[in-house]
Length: 144
Image (cartoon, rainbow, N blue to C red; front, side, top):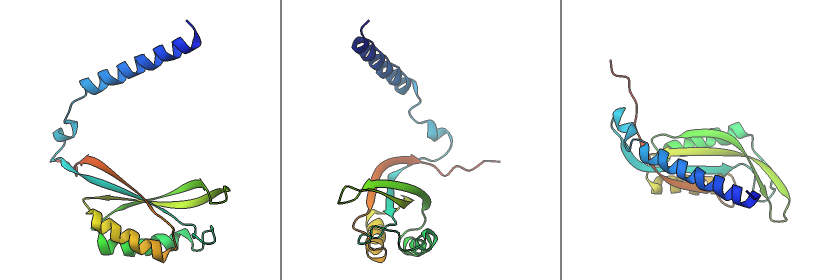
C-alpha cells in the first residue's frame, strides 16, 4: 500500500471507531449520578499584559485578587486557573503572558459581559477572549 493510501485507510478506520464509540455510549450517563442541568458555560481568558506596554504591569496575584472582587459583584461563583499564553504582537514579535482563565456556570451572559467591561478598563486590555459552550452538569452528592 502506498503511504497516502495507508494514511487515508488509517483516517477512515479512526472515524469508524470513534463513531462506534459514540453510538454505543450511553446517552444520559450523567443522569445516573443525579439531576442533570443543561446550561451554557462561559470560559473567559484574561491576559495580564498591558495593551500599551505589552508587559505585565501588575503582579499576577494582585490581578487575581482584584478580579475576584469584580467577579463576585456580578456572579454567584466561578473557577479560576492560571495559565500561560503566547501570541504574536502587532509587530509580529512572539509574546508571552500569564493568562487567567475563568469558568462560569449558571451565570447569565449579561453578568459575564459586566465582568469583562470592568476588566478591560481596570487592566488596560485591548480584548478578552470569551468562549461559550453548551454544558450538561450535575452537582454530585454522595447519598448515604
